[in-house]
Image (tube, rainbow, N blue to C red):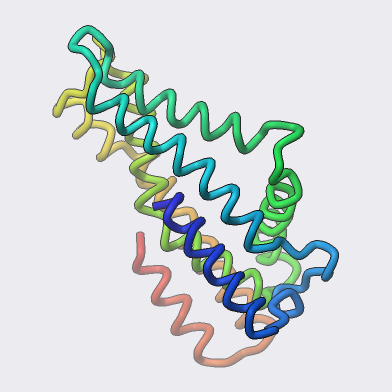
Length: 199
């Protein structure tokens, strides 16, 4: 889903650029910090190749290869691509990290439109984050490095997985409460109520 989200992001940026919609002003960005759709497509293509290679390896793996090793390789390779110092999308990485930091700090400094959009995006991915945690949990707790139902079930009901899945909703909840403090309107409390039930 993260890779698909990257392709959709590129499609959106391309459409906004085609119709000369200046979205950078909505997100409080400088024009020089603007990320082109070509860069987003390049990032998405690289991640798609890595994901497809991982899926093909998983489906054709021999019986002796631990089944948990292949998803672990996917996560490690994705992290290496994201953190590679001279990567072609280094600028996009810093923009994303800055936006995440700004969204988490918005609870204390004030909530803007960009913070709401990014936090809503994170809430859409909360199940993905929980699944990623479950995969890592299974890898760490499986004795023979294979997926087993009892280990997977134990990891899915683990408190840490629930917290990982709840962090985006907590962020939106606190943003709604902060927005209510700044601008006491009923809609902020209703939104806060909505996100408080997401746990």
